[in-house]
Image (cartoon, rainbow, N blue to C red):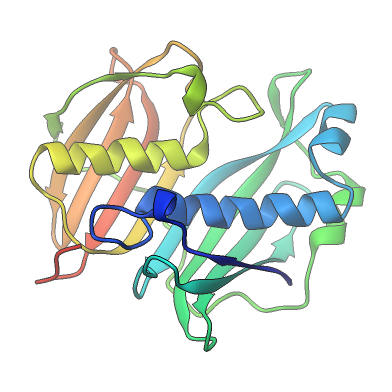
Length: 243
């Protein structure tokens, strides 16, 4: 297991003074990135081997989001790896060790030169841990919004949305989906965020969020102008709670 400690910064908070959803996702991504750098499997190594790890799916369960100034501990571990994919858990805990956020995720290795998913190289098995999977519901295999949903304001992918792989950062899809809920007046406290990533959004691409209601929450389909899906984001809401 890899762990780092931090403190919630003002720049990471939403209007309620709590860690925002997008900042929370960034902390999870940072944990796996920091681990890669410490194991000498980071950006330089990946670039040298012309590969990249790409995220296929998230399930992030939220007990509560920490407050401004709160000290937190962020952890990650790979609990299963095959030749085709890796499964990795995450957690955010408070200073007393109480778990605030837990997450599961599925990853693939992308051959940058060939432009396709490839097998997991043997040297990447260094991530594999003896830690068991976090105690949480399973990853969603399928997210199917009911109906076409309500279209909200389209966004163009800008340079500041990109990561080092030159496609839109994983957290930015969650941000766009959350903004779509805000636009329609559906903001609230989130108990779980599930994401299925279908294809990469690149610089200049236009993304149109479509919001569909479901029991206990909302589905947001992020598509291009032709309706082809970049990602599907499901928000399960805490009933009776505002952010």
